[in-house]
Length: 403
Image 1 (tube, helix red, strand yellow):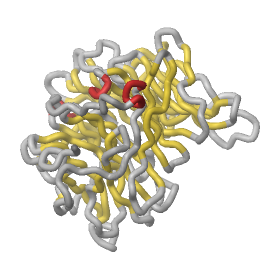
Image 2 (cartoon, one colour):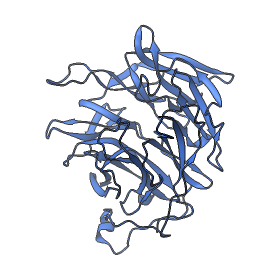
Image 3 (cartoon, one colour):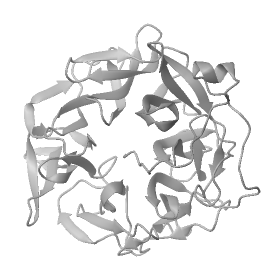
Image 4 (tube, helix red, strand yellow):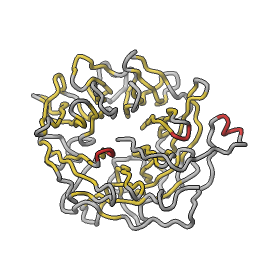
């Protein structure tokens, strides 16, 4: 769930003579590659196949990842920044704590990083909290050892997502909590909340109907999320300012939208852009033009699978990309439908399948940038017996960049 960055180098320029470029609207073009044909090198197993690893979350700037095993033990693994190998392959470099509600048994995702001061990179977890079956906890390194702390008033809350601003003295978490006054006919039981990690009195419920799929915006005191827009009964994207406690609707066009990400794009002089997944089939990319969020591109890889999930942004060599899963099944939790892993540029001009062409069930891609360029890590079944492992796919963006 982290935005991965790399130092800028080659710069992508919009066509100077294009009126669309002047407006900041990016035309969607055909599949393009600077070296053709490009064939993905064989995907490499990086994890120990005897140790199932679930939902590894990477911290790019200190070469680590965190995960929880099937019995709730939280581990930190390390990544070789030169080769992209896991150290060790089991992912068990440091045992952090126990008692987390783990993937895939009892929680929708595992531990997440929270960047902070003075404890550096803390962890937010779902755990048993008092008498509550699920609650919020944090884990931090006190200079000597890792300490686990149950968050005050954290009962009946779960699935925290941490803010990612380095040295933040007031780190924040976004999470699910009890739904109060559900709308008529709703079957939902939870809604989005936010709070400062260490201050339960700051807790606020995000405004909107059936809120979900939120992310913190790095460098801004805000978050983006989806909610039902009662003017058209479609799921739209909103930005919430935590200082003013106000939500602004960013989209109003057709399609139910989920999975928003807002980040700074070097293509636009580090202006903020955002994308969302519309109807689980296309990615819409938006830029603020003259005070109005305007869709500037549609991203749709030429994949066998029609549906898109787990879309994450990353920036490499002065250009913005999205990694994603494509599937023939609209349910991202489906465990039998074949899936592939793709990357795409945010202008929709460049697509590349980085998973091997063999049929497989692949989930949860995350990008980590090595000295050999970006690698995409994902979880997949090793054999028909159900054994899973983490694989590493070379993006080819160093050896074979887009034009």
